[in-house]
Length: 342
Image 1 (cartoon, rainbow, N blue to C red):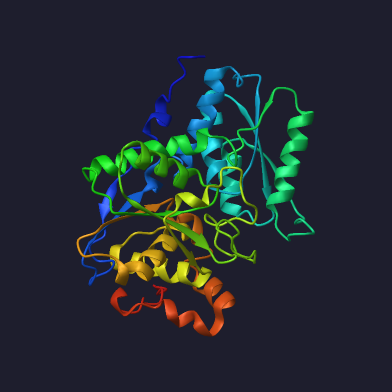
Image 2: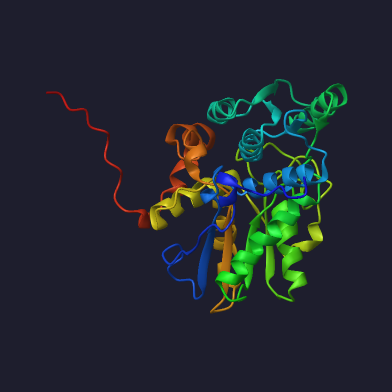
């Protein structure tokens, strides 16, 4: 299978747009750019990781269409990325999700004909679902002939995919990238981007963006609401030392930043994209004039309409501080939906 390539729709993975955010921080004396990963065919940056992981298996012969069974733990973007690739190559996919997986993501997985297994009880020690999901993946792999576990948490092909991500950014800005803001979960994106920077002698400051309640950079574990950044378990790919700066953001800061982003730049972005905006906002007063700052936006906001962009969801979880996300630069209040009666 040495000649396996990303053909058809899979050939559109990567080469996502880099856009300047001129209105996001009006008083910032530098320039801000966003890498819009929602334009991958599966809707997120995880398409890159999924393609790298599965092409590696196909090229090595570990994955054989019509025989092999892909098994992975994911409740969101990676699951959808793998589902798309498995459907293209005719591979069966068993995806272990948990009770927090949204109905929208479950519907997408079923549309791709994925066998979905839902973990309903969290780990009794940590209170998190991830340890239980991973244990269940191991059980399925051990008991399923020709099973293949891509293992996004430890497979070096995950970060290798993002050397290209950083290469695209560097090429678009002629190598002038002063700060890179990267939401962190498996360390795939951060580790791959950092590898490209080192290999090409770039002195970019890498800012790791993590969630309050995540353990990735030594924080204490605590409940988190916004998926896409942070983790309850330190993954095998973890390399905290690759981040020159680390910013921890709260769930409310993510919501506020997402609302600010759509109000000022008309970009409907996911929660982890909002986390990078919140991190830049926090560090902006310290950054030197003329700095080029790049924010990696992992996905779009269409998968967060029931959470980040739902006023009812936000009010229910943040109560009296709900008004903090309202930005006076967002424009006039939204009109109520009118019902026309003829």
